[in-house]
Image (cartoon, rainbow, N blue to C red; front, top):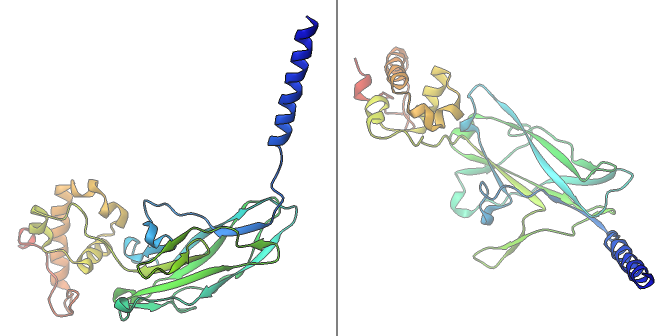
Length: 267
């Protein structure tokens, strides 16, 4: 019995020693980085880029706020820790020049607070930026790049890196590249018989239909919308009458071809 008690005491001592070791905490520096984005949305090679498709938002909405989460690496603190976020030079690929322009403060986005902080006892904060919708987005994209800056208390301790085809390395968690455009993709259901109702697809035609008929653009893109055959036929006929009444006529993206619905919507 005495031997059993001694063994039990030794085991308890070892267990407690192991527990104490597991309780050791990180005592190094603290850092910041932009929160990882969903890889299903952001391919790895563009993992610091956020596409913002105005075309999928109702046409009467001219301002939209986005929130970028900034995470802490290291220990929380009992006081606020400040750092800076600034607008950085946006690099436009040579092949996209003319189709993409650098965003301008007050035109494409509102001025935002560049002094941020990780609040006391918190592990993250959010940078909020208000984006502005302009007519220029109909023909060209706008790019806005924001980057983090180290402070005395918050360093760059972590970031994933990628290597481009020219062997240039890029740390992708210390900046975010926001690319705005008016893209409204072709719905999966717009093919076959739908061409007879709406005619050939164009993004301008799709946007016009959504605006005139007050159709939510997320609903428009859903598979369920494409199954509402009677509603689609009504929309096609209504849109053709509406187009016939416009003076000057509404033209397609080339600015010359009159917009029209398909043959099943003619009367």
